[in-house]
Image (cartoon, rainbow, N blue to C red; front, top):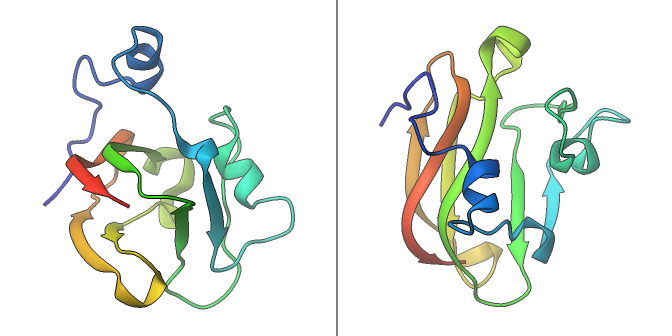
Length: 129
């Protein structure tokens, strides 16, 4: 599955949150990264600022992990990726996995990104994480 290059009308997560259509629940999770350069980690990835970002530091694959403390239904995951800003460092694949612990994760969705230039919708539907 390939993402569209632009955010479809009506899918801006900030606008949807303001209208009560979606709710940001990332603060309820524990975030971890396979590696990062100093000053380019989880805090920058999660910042409400499109100028900050995660920059990995190490061998591939570069992984981000989001763990909720209890079962949580996630209907849509929004990820901002901009090829024009990042070029070769931009995400090229997103894999969403669910499970009760790290050892029983099952992939439920995979997206291939081709020069994304907007917010990527990485999953739809109700999945318990």
